[in-house]
Length: 245
Length: 245
DNA sequence: TTTTGTTTGATAGCATTACTATCGATGTTC
DNA sequence: GAACATCGATAGTAATGCTATCAAACAAAA
Image (cartoon, protein in one colour):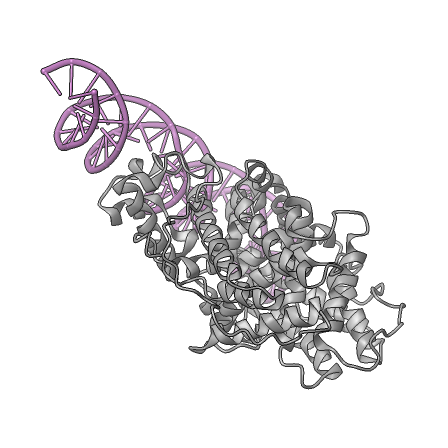
């Protein structure tokens, strides 16, 4: 059974679906690498075309601007994380186990998707950490939001928020907590690497585990169900996935 | 008594001190307005010069790039918030009252500074909310960090983190909590206005008060001193300041 | 097998951006 | 009034962010 995970919440994310053609897939693949190497500011379609052995104009046939390309990539990421979260949560029953599972997916969203070989999830994760917030910190947010280009982020947050409400229906800040955890999961690795005095975590090998513990600490204290404070479900935090994306 | 608040942690923030000349002050003042109007991406020194009735080259004598200008403004903001926090905290004695005071400054950093007439703190606050994170999400972070260009953010966070440790010396995540509160104080108003499904707060008149309550809720639950949970200190949350900056 | 249409690569071009350099005019200082 | 710094003005250059055109390559349709 191949679950169809929506990658395009809106046709506005590209001029033509890059997943349908060879060039399109290479654009996605190489743009992630190039973004990771030189950053969004220095990234240009000219450089990408050169790297692809293709022409600038060819890329413009898929994406009208580098901002649209960024939105595409970030949406892909949000959908991927959402999928991982759903997958992990579905295997759990107690609310706290669900939270653990969701946090596991948030802190380790770089498991690779065997159904999509042209995207390096590890690289994409790093790119989103570095450039992700630029996708919505723009003068065009409202216009793009009305076209549904941020649905990926919103539905992901709301699904996570719902788990908090499952634990404690009176918790007053489920959405803020969900987005905060998401942002923390990106900011802390970044800070640990570049501005270490802004975080308590070290850029170790086991950063993910430390962060997982920290985010769970956050939820435990904030959502604060009085019973069942430490649900000892250790399994299935980051399940290996094998469905097609 | 005029307290000297450091605005330039490093000479690297400008080519020449804009506070010393009339043109310099007008550059600061108008750049904030222009950034607020059209955003960092569309902002150019040419447009700014036109608005100033000046020449592009004249601006380049103060700032080598718009990125340097952004760093200057963001540092000004960090120092200003830091000053407000110190000011507010100094008047309190109990740790929780200090937290309340600090959060008050974080959520309402737009009180105006009578000693600096060419900066509109309200506008600057909005600009930092919209563009602030772009100051350190760059490929040049490490280089700039080694020059001390982010000291403002780091010392602010650490001072706030120290208050948490005062409450609970064993709290394991003081810095992460400090930066999280700071980022939440920026993200939530932004989300409330542009992506409302990402937050629980409404873009009301009393957003600041709601946010203040929320951030205090965060600290209360997370830092979690068992005694003295609700310190009823209501005064001096955002003091009017009159020292020279 | 021709025809038609689609995709691509190649080239050109254009307005804007991000600067740098030069050069007088206008102060200001001593 | 000589020396100096500041500023506005103009010019120029390399890179950016696109748009347009055209022909080769290929696939689908007739």
